[in-house]
Structures are given as C-alpha cells and as structure tokens.
Length: 171
Image (cartoon, rainbow, N blue to C red; front, side, top):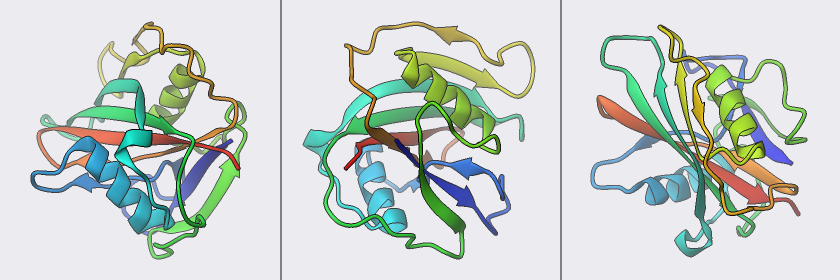
C-alpha cells in the first residue's frame, strides 16, 4: 500500500495526489527532512536507521529556468504513531492506495517515481520540457520488498533542490 495525500489550497497541483512533502531547512539533511515532514504532516515518528534509499530522480519541473530538482525516495517498515492529517489547510485527503493502482490524478513525476520503485529502477529523469521526459536508467535496488509499503515526500529550497519520498511498511 502507499499513503498519498491530495493537495489542497497550496497553489501547486491542488486536487492531485502526492506524497508527504516539504522544503529542506538550512543545514538539514534529506533524511532529517523526511523525518521532520512525516511528523509535521502525518503525525508519525521515523528513525534514520530504519530508512533506506530506493530511488533518485533528476527533475525539471518546467516552471522556470532555474527549477531543477533532485528527488530522493526512501523505504522503511517501521514508524511510531497513528497516521493523521496534521495539515488539513494543505491536504483534503490522506489515504492508502494499492501500490499498483494509484489515483489517475496523481502528480506525473510522483507516478513515474512509483512506477520506477515498483520496477526496481534506482535512477530516473523527469522533465515537463524538452526530450528528457520519462528517461530512465535501470539500476537494481537490492531486491527490496515493496509489497506492503507506502510512500511519502519532502523538498529542498535551492536552485538544485530535492524532494524526498518514504515508503512505509503497511500494518
């Protein structure tokens, strides 16, 4: 299963599903960001030692000349707390979906990341402009079992910035 949230009242992809997301703060690592964002948005506590990277994406969102992103997706089977929508002013639905049957209104780069993770593709490119859309490089993800897992997300605020996904083991 995958935990997705439907964006609401944010000004970016409202009405579409995404993962838990946010901006990396000054001197914060990708891992620290996803731990913080998971608590802020979904009320769950994660530990760095329980996280493993399963996918990296280089993304050009096409919004401006300087809008390159690096997205990093993690997996874990452990967390503490009950999942709740801590930000109803930014999210109008927080729900579990089958990893192979996500909503049609999922943000396109999130769809690609989920497909890549399902296919054990470690690195991919995504672009809304030019010829880079959908390019992937297949790299083995060490046979991570993704059957009963969920995905969340976060974002770094730089010219070259990053988003972070987290796959949580289903309970």
